[in-house]
Length: 282
Image 1 (tube, one colour):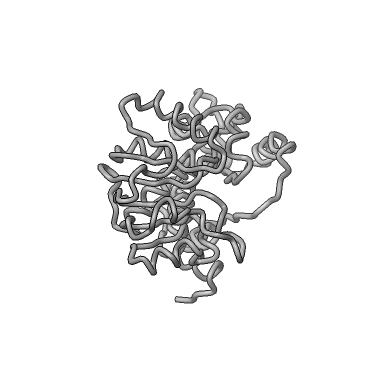
Image 2 (image 1 turned 120 degrees about the vertical axis):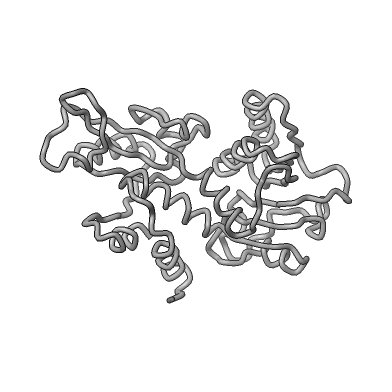
């Protein structure tokens, strides 16, 4: 999607994928910096590790405690820090790496676009309290959902995340596990686990604990396959459904804007994603 965006705007840039072992992450970031990269994206398991490896953190990375986007900057002779793309002829006095997080806003934007859902005042059941689930939970709390129920296979992770939310939002209501009543209505169920990535994976939702008929909408962060077992069951139960392609699109668009300081060409990026992932052509 980034290469499609560069082409759409006539930028002579290139986005490439590189596999990096976690033990080599610090060296990889430093290498990209000295080679003059405009920036990089990070995926699991690097997002949490990079928080302590960049020179500075944007407010977004500080709030969500994870880095998925890095922009490399240079300092001018006047002491100003500018993106490295600004140094076409001059050489910066020194360079630095700045960490950002675009995942949280990517999720919120996708929910608004794909489910027509504003989060304020909604009741949400979140499946998963790992890296993606943690960011989602913190974002949901900041968006002032009315109630948040956290479900995770490892209970200690739920308790740790509840404590983190309580420190940031002392009056916010967080439930551990499924809603107590089998009649409780939930506006939105979000899957932030990896269950559904592989063929034959069971649904991450225990319907003996919470029947899907009590949910208004279901969002699965997984985008390949396009429809997971959870989304199939949710559609059959009459729920509105969406997968994580929109989240991928919007977090990528924000990264693009951080690097280029230009509005992202969303439709060109969306078409490239759908063609690459699902084989769809416009």
